[in-house]
Length: 216
Image 1 (spheres, rainbow, N blue to C red):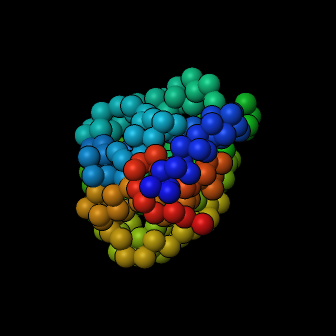
Image 2: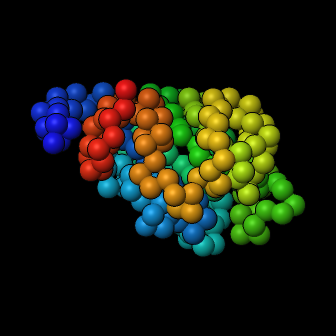
């Protein structure tokens, strides 16, 4: 009850200074985000929205990248990208192909969660259109969250991606592909990370999702 009261009393301040806080654009991966995926939980947040990149089951680079570009250009507010799996590749390719200086104040960063190794010989055939892995340094701040037992990218490969993109590498331990099967649910660790980048209060994010876990 105390957490709810704190959330309600802080809402007015949250609305007043919201212009200083970025909206969050959710970028799902192959086959989209099922109901138990952390992105589907985050989509319930008032300042989050999922970008319709294209056909989730038959992804095409030259469909997904223009869709992301439109979403960034049409956003009336600064944004932070929260990408999972192939969505990370869409973000990296967009930064490589579409970046202009006008985005410098608009795109505050990206949370890149479990990017797959699209160059691997064993890569899922449907994601091979995103080859090769873009290697240019990203023009915005980024955090790359990698699992030690991700079946789609060895941890060492994730570390290489982070180095290529200039991303801060976050070790998630053994958490699979950091997807619905990983049992992350609302993923409070991720909420803490996205709050760092977007300027939101992580406790307000937790409260808005109806959780009872306060974060320092």
